[in-house]
Length: 102
Image (tube, rainbow, N blue to C red; front, side, top):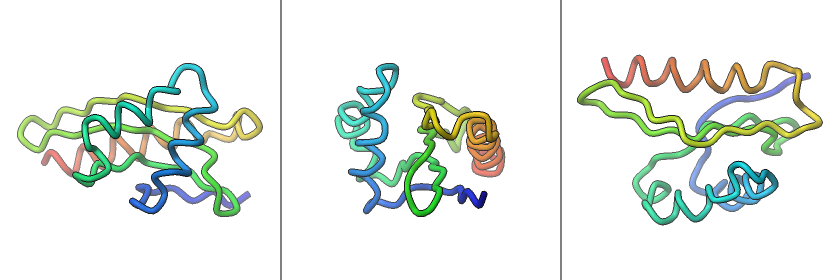
C-alpha cells in the first residue's frame, strides 16, 4: 500500500474541506481555515493520499519566532485506520515544525 504524504496544494482546498466535513469532530475546518485565510497565506494542511485521494489530514500552523506548533485538525478515513497514517501525519508536522522554527 503506497500512501503519499505532503502539504496539500491550493488546488486541493475543496477535496480537503470535503474530507474534513465527513468527521463530526473537525467539520468546522472549512469555515475556520477560510475565515483565517490560511489557504491564501500558504498555511496548507498535511495530507495523506492513497490512489490520489485524501485519506488523512493534519492541519497545523507554525511560528518561526518561537518554534511553536499549533495542531488544530486531524482525521484519518475509517477504512484506512490502523495503517499508521495518523502517526505519520503527526511525525510530518513535528519534523517540519522542528526545521521551520530552527
